[in-house]
Length: 455
Image (cartoon, rainbow, N blue to C red; front, side, top):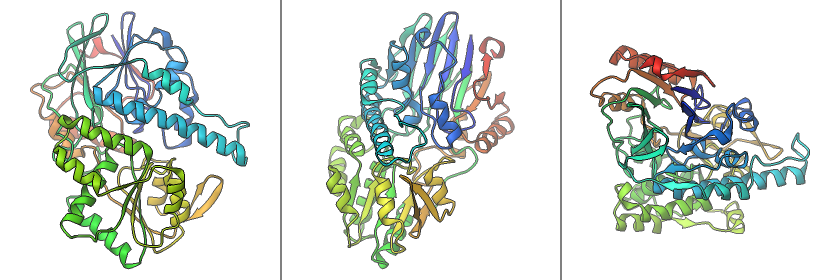
C-alpha cells in the first residue's frame, strides 16, 4: 500500500493525496494550486498517474484548493464516483461552476484587451467541463461506513471549517488512514467544532496555521474599530472575502455589531453571486451549524445582495460610507478586483483582508505593503488603509490543532504534516514530535511512501 502526495505539500493549495492498494486507486481531494506562478503552472501539468485507473475520489470539503481540479480530472478521462457529504456536493456545484465562468471571462477579457502572454489565452477548464463533474457526485452522510472501492471503506466525520467539511477515514486491509482536511475552530460562532478522532494508523494533518495562534483580541471590537475609523474619513470598507464560510461569518459579525450599537446602521453589500448561493445553503443544512432558522434569517436580512453586473458597477460610485464584501478572499479574481481598482487608490477608504493570504497572491502583496498591484494589465496604486485580521479564520490555529491531536487515545504509527507553507508545516512537525512524541514528517511534492513500511 502506497501514499503519494500530489499536492498540498509546501503550500496551502492543490491538495491531492493518492492511496494505492494493489490495483485500487483512491484520491483524497482534488484541489487547484493557487498563489505563486510556479505553483499555478502545476495546474497545467498532467498528473503522474493514469486518470482512468482511479477508482474513486473523496473530498474533504468544497473549497477550490481541495476540489477545483476536478473538471480537469474528468475532462482528461476520470469517470468514477466522487464521494463527499451532501453539503459539500451542493457547495462544490456552486464553486466549480463559478470558477469555470470566471476562468472563461478572464481569458476572454485578456484576449479582448491583449494583455496575456498567450495567444490566445484560454481557461484551465470551461463551464461545460465543470458540469460533467456534477454527474459524478455521490453524497455520503456523516458516520456512514461505505465500501467505495475493492477493499476500501470510507467514513466521514465533522471537521467544522465550512458547511459539509469532513475528516476522511479510509480503512484498507485493517489499516486506517485519516486525513484531517481543513480543521475548523472549536469555538467558531457559526460552525460546529471538529469531531475528535481516537485512532489511526496513518494521519495526514493540515498545518495552515501551524506556526501561529489566532489573536485573542475581540473580533467584534477589531472589526468595529476598522469600520468606525473608515467612517470618520467618510470612506468605504472593502472586504475581500472567501465566498463560502468567510462571507457568512462576516455577515453574522456585522449583524451583531449593528444590533449591539457598536457600529452605525450603514449599508452592508454582499457582492458575490457565489456567496449568495452559498448563503442560501445555511438554511438547507442547519444541522451543520449553530445558528437557528430565525438567526439565519436576521443575519441575511441585514445584508443587501448585489446580483447583477450593473449593480456591482454602481457600488464603485458610492459616495456614502458602506461595507462591501466581495469575492475573492485573496483578491485573485472575481468582482473584488473591480472594487479594488475603484476604491484602493482613495486614502479615505479601507481594505480589510479577513483571512490567510497565500504567498504570491495579490492579497499577500497588499498586506505586505505593496504600493501598487497589477490588475487586468494596469498598475493600480494602493492608497487606502490596509488591515488584516487572522482571528476571523475558519482554520484551527496551532494550539487548536495540537488540542485536536491530543484527542487520539494512541499515537498514529506515522503522521504527515500537509497543507501548510514550509515554515508552518515544519513548526507543527516539531511541536508534534516534541510535545506528543509521535513519529512525524513533512512530505515533499510527489513523494511516495509505503504505508506497509510505516505500519
